[in-house]
Amino acid sequence: MKININIQEHKSLRELVYDRLHELIVNGDIKPGTRLMEVDLAEKLGVSRTPVREAIRKLEREGLVIIKERKGAYVSEISIRSMIDILEVQSNLEGLAAYLAAYRMDKSQQEELFQIEKEFEKAVDGGDVNQISKVDEEFHRRLVQSSENAHLIHLLEQLNEHVIRFRYLYYQDIRRVEEMIPEHQSILDAIVESRAEKARNAAYSHIDKLKDMVLRGELQ
Image (cartoon, rainbow, N blue to C red; front, side, top):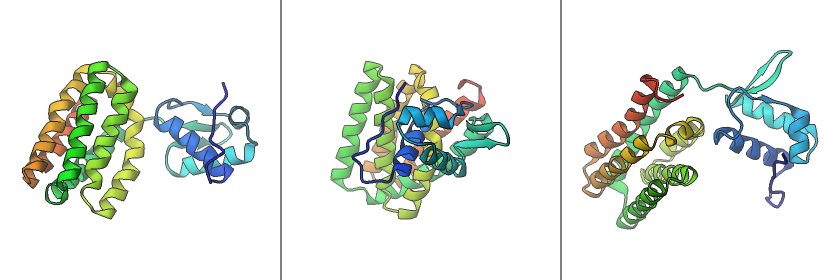
């Protein structure tokens, strides 16, 4: 199977290879535990082994790849402990983002977020997992950006790379996805009402419910 990269982008070959492998890993197309063979990847990407090797080293520094001595490079596993640790941080940071957004989000931003939520509901009705994932990610991205706190936005962008890796697991559970609709609405309502603490609690609860699913062993 050939893996396409966009050589029209104004990036080095190393960056293009990294971007493509990063995307495949965080989206779950390359599963945790998969061995990354430089020769095979170079052939599929249509490049030499050098940019592949450099990309793998960068992915290792980010924790997405583990290099085992005399065994090679593997996509890092997603442990229950890791998921819990990530969600504990995400719930608190997104709670803060919602709190700040309640003060700082203007009318046009509110309308945009309502429109994204309508798109999310439509995706859920259609049962399109890829679209559900895409729109849900956009909802959270816009919410965080509306905090207008550059450091908070940066922290959550970094964290989101790890969150995306296990999101595909719970998007398969239509019951959980359907529950997310009123949860999003609660966050939005609190923001529109400028009730910052209510917005914080709603955003925290939204992520915390996913953590409860992990603790109950419902994500496998």
